[in-house]
Amino acid sequence: MILTRREAVAWAAGAAGTLTLGDAAAAQAPSPDFVTRKGTQLLRFGKPYRITGANLWYAAWLGADAAFGDRARLIRELDRLQALGINNLRIMAAAEEGPLRNAIKPGFTRADGGANAALLEGLDFALAEIAARGMTAVVVLSNFWEWSGGLQTLLWRATGRFIDMGDPAHPWPAFADATARTYANPEAMALYRDHVRSLLVRRNSVTGRLYAQDPAIMAWQLANEPRPGGSNAAIAANRAAYLAWIADTTALIRASAPHQLVSLGQEGTQATNGDAALVAEAHAAVDYVTAHIWPLNWGWVKGDDLAGTWPEGRRKVEAYIADHIAVAERLGKPLVIEEFGFPRDGEAHDPASPATFRAAYYRTIYSAVEASWRQGGVVAGSNFWAWNGEARAAHADYRFKDGDRAYMGDPPHEPQGWYGVFDSDAGLHALIRDHVALALTV
Image 1: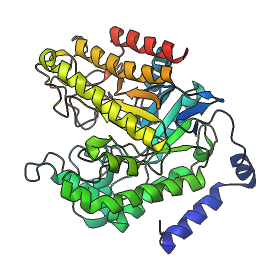
Image 2: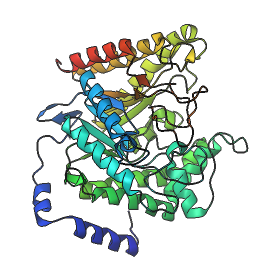
Image 3: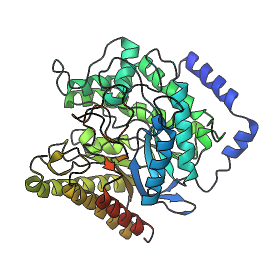
Image 4: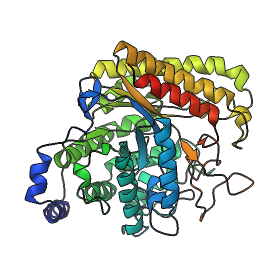
């Protein structure tokens, strides 16, 4: 990574103003509660760290002491997750305000690039509460998709141009192809690195601990589902810039946070149009392989015929897991299935509707994870998508509108209740608890 003189000066000044000699000494002697990697295993306190996780992207929003926040609800949700045995949460630490139609507001950075202090303090609060429960977090540093602004918004800030996901004038894969140009745009990448560095030198306003020295941060994740493009032509054209972005950002993070892990956040071969070699190359610099699995979104099942399409869907799920186990084995690194989601029966959104096939899907994922645990394999664990908790849709059409505060695991561009697990989903809770119980015994 080549920094401009402005970036180098800003980075040195920020680090000097934040780090002290005592901090530097502490950085050389990490506590045993950091999650570390040894070969294909994740370890904590010297023992295998089996991830029984969930996605809670909105934790910082709830944690904000502001009109858009709800700290009391965050505490309740974390207590519920702890009671289920969840030990790892994947949370957003980036959101960029701009012109994209479906991007959530507020963001961590405003449209003019200025930081949102309230949301950053919400992240502080969320990390403090996660740490207080002995949990860890995967901190996501940007997004390939539009619902948090993401890379497309950084490209807009750099160029003045953008594409909305789902715009009929720019059908798929135009959005993905356009967003992937971010990796080669120096101005957009400078904005991305500015945000990454601001977190690396941040001191938590609740705990007083530097983020880079906080064992509650298991991993810094480069982005949510970063792709090198949508079309094969774009993937080929962006390949070098994509791999350079991964390697350079990983090096930047490791230089300041040597005791925390780095992950990519990629879906796997779905992100590379089936190119497993590119998946392996993309994960060469980071600490573990990630895979996301979305049978409905990818057309493996039909929401109005889950009974008829699930058997073949399950076969594809099992094959996808096997393919990514092979990638992880090839690299000698752990694999985390960090997103997996499935609709309720009939693709309903009401929490009172049954979730028979979702339970079967969760069981399929968990069975693969558990088999790897028993065999001493590469799968470190999983994070279901996502926790809705006590939130309920505010509108009859189950759509999120600007100003809504009942945040769910279903992000603002999706129907509210589509994939998330509610506090009333007793059957799914029992399934999760059984999985956690096994994690504690293998």
